[in-house]
Image (tube, rainbow, N blue to C red; front, top):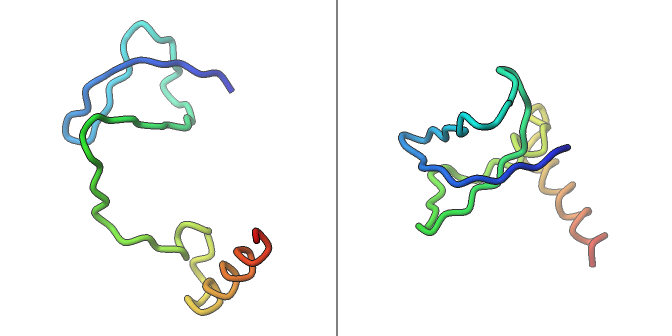
Length: 73
């Protein structure tokens, strides 16, 4: 993995990569955004979606998360 750093304005939730970077038309990237303005989450955290277990019940997800949390302690 290679890292590049630049500053850019975000407009309408779009971030434009400066033309000086040679990035393929199709590329996967990990993006970290640092802003001076506060960030407001507009959706509620969905653990089923986050953990990729959409077919599992919420109770099963909660049990899994609790067991993992106990391992951390």
